[in-house]
Amino acid sequence: MTTTLATHGAGAPAPAPWGIRLSGVTVRYPNGTVGLRGVDLDIAAGELVAIVGLSGSGKSTLIRTINGLVPATDGQVEVGGRRVDGASAAALRELRGHIGMVFQSFNLAGRTTVLNNVLVGRLAHTALWRTLVGAYREADRRLAYEALDRVGILSKVYERASALSGGQQQRVAIARALAQQPRIVLADEPVASLDPPTARGVMDDLRRINQDLGITVLVNLHLLDLAREYGTRMIGMRAGEIVYDGPASDASDAVFEEIYGRSLTAADRLDR
Image 1 (cartoon, helix red, strand yellow):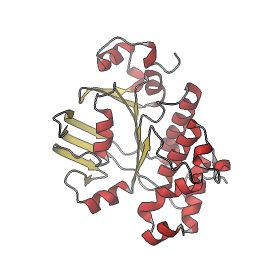
Image 2 (tube, rainbow, N blue to C red):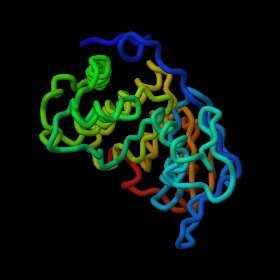
Image 3 (cartoon, helix red, strand yellow):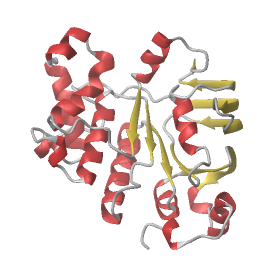
Image 4 (spheres, one colour):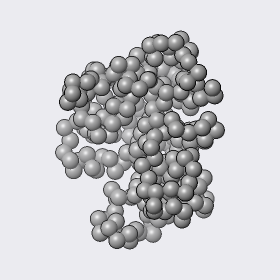
């Protein structure tokens, strides 16, 4: 099955991407740990942004705060001009239906088929009874097929997810996010457990999604090679604060050392 770049599923125009704005956002966890400290951030609709920082720097908290999975203690969070902080449970569910999430651990149901995993992306747009009995509409199935085709694994559509390699499973996770017809894709360390060639393949998929469909993409990374190669804009985080915000191509090793608060090591590079 072949998709066109001008459309996004079933011949429909791709949904308009959303921008993101954080104003003075602080996140304080119940144990007193501060995940974000007064973060101000504007991301334009359609940007591809690499967020870098060591473990505990706040980059995962940032992603989860944008999606409303972690509530802001102070400040305002907006996606697509809609407030996330203080939103009702129903409003958050509706917002999340437009935000695709890709995780390091894939979060797939290993015992069922690739197709069924991707159709999970239609949950927010499908009547509950259809989900419970597996009676997905043909239009939803077409969206799933097209999403799998876009990431190059349509041939695996009827295989069990657990039978796939790690890179293939991550592509299923990306296809699941695409099946939502998202306005934003948030990827939290999507290549941390993958070998270098597979990691670049997954990053190629995310870049094509951004370039071909115009979807706003934020991707958390800790490898400077990938941040430089794939990010058009890079945000560096340290101790819950933004310490760098600029073109990824301008980020020298010295910039990364400032972000990381230490000298670089081989583990900070993909091809080590």
